[in-house]
Length: 99
Image (cartoon, rainbow, N blue to C red):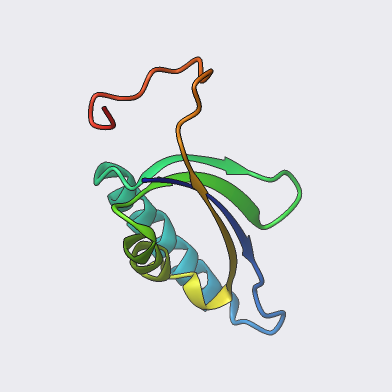
């Protein structure tokens, strides 16, 4: 399944800068692993905000929850998930794995 996921980060104002940097570094590394595994397909930053939209793949919503909650920034995330279905006028053909 594909999911459109909006993630907003709410860092505590009094968070230790070194801890924030360590969590951010771990987040980028884990996101790269999820991308290599085919779960994180695309990611877009919302300019001027600590927010992003991503196209994610998982077997089902339960697996997606496990994936998203494994991210190091999870404790500071506000997440909105939209499950996606194919549309008959989609100009992009399904990937071979989706067919």
